[in-house]
Each structure stands twice: as C-alpha cells, then as structure tokens.
Image: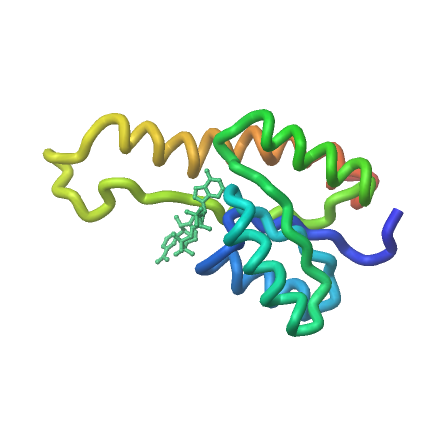
Amino acid sequence: MSSKKIALVTGANKGIGFETARQLAAKGITVLLGARDEKPGLEAAETLKKEGLDVQFLQLDVNDPASQDNAAKFIADKFGKLDILINNAGVARDFQVPRLKARRNNGVRTFETNLFSLISLTQKCCRWSKRAMPGRS
Ligand SMILES: NC(=O)c1ccc[n+]([C@@H]2O[C@H](COP(=O)([O-])OP(=O)(O)OC[C@H]3O[C@@H](n4cnc5c(N)ncnc54)[C@H](OP(=O)(O)O)[C@@H]3O)[C@@H](O)[C@H]2O)c1
C-alpha cells in the first residue's frame, strides 16, 4: 500500500474541483483527478503535472454506475486504499430560472448528480477509505 495519501476529486477538470486537486497535490498527496470526459480530464491533469504535482486523470461520470465501479476498482487495484474523497462534481440546472418555470427533469438531474450519485460513490469508495483508516466503522 502506498505510503502517500491518496485523494479522489470528482469533477476536477475545471473550477473548484481543479483548484482543490491542485492544492491537495501541493501538500504531497497523490491526486486522482476525476472527470467524465477524457480530453478535458487529461488536459487538466497534464497542466498540474507540469507544475510538478502528482496528479493522474481518472475517468469518472458520477451519474454512471459502471463508471463509478471502474473508478473504485482502479483505486483498489492500484492503491488498495483511499484517504480522501472530495465529492465536488455537481450541476445547478435551472439555477437562474424562476421557480415557477423550472423544469422537473432538470431538478431530477440536479438531485441525481448532487445527492444520489454522491451517496453511491461514497459507499463504493468507503471500503477503501476504511483500509486507509483502520478502526473507522
Ligand atoms: N461556484 C459556486 O459559487 C458554487 C456554489 C455552491 C456550490 N457549488 C458547488 O461546488 C461544486 C463545484 O462548483 P464549480 O463552480 O467549480 O462548478 P463548475 O465549474 O460548473 O464545475 C463542475 C464540475 O463538475 C463536473 N460534473 C458535472 N456533472 C458531472 C458528472 N455527472 N460526472 C462527473 N463530473 C461532473 C463538471 O464536468 P464537465 O466539465 O464535464 O461539465 C465540472 O468539472 C459543484 O458541486 C457546485 O454545485 C458551487
């Protein structure tokens, strides 16, 4: 098992997630930069690698159970633990639309991404975080 701490940041190809990945890696943590699309994910990881940071792209669409499973398996196979999970990926569909005009499907998508996917990903990653922190229930 790696002696370095391992972190996964979801939705880290831009915005707050990208900066969070940068700041964690700057503390000497190995960061898995989660992104649903390969091109922006690889580009973001490359930008941070050029800063001398230990960052690698991990394909992860938080709304796709198969993508979640693949990410959890990758973490298990390569690191055998996960110290930090940053559930950053999120959407705010119809955020600026008057409430009476907001569409149901956009609300469902927002809750799916920001809540239910977060719960299932956390559950899948939890077994690896327990290995990183024995004694946690
Ligand atoms: N900025 C604010 O003022 C603010 C306020 C309150 C809460 N937040 C929350 O903070 C988090 C980051 O905000 P931000 O301003 O950095 O937002 P952002 O710039 O829109 O970035 C959101 C990130 O989430 C990713 N994402 C969305 N759906 C995804 C999915 N299904 N699977 C994987 N990645 C997905 C996006 O990927 P793509 O590039 O592929 O779309 C992007 O990388 C979000 O959860 C947001 O709701 C932000």
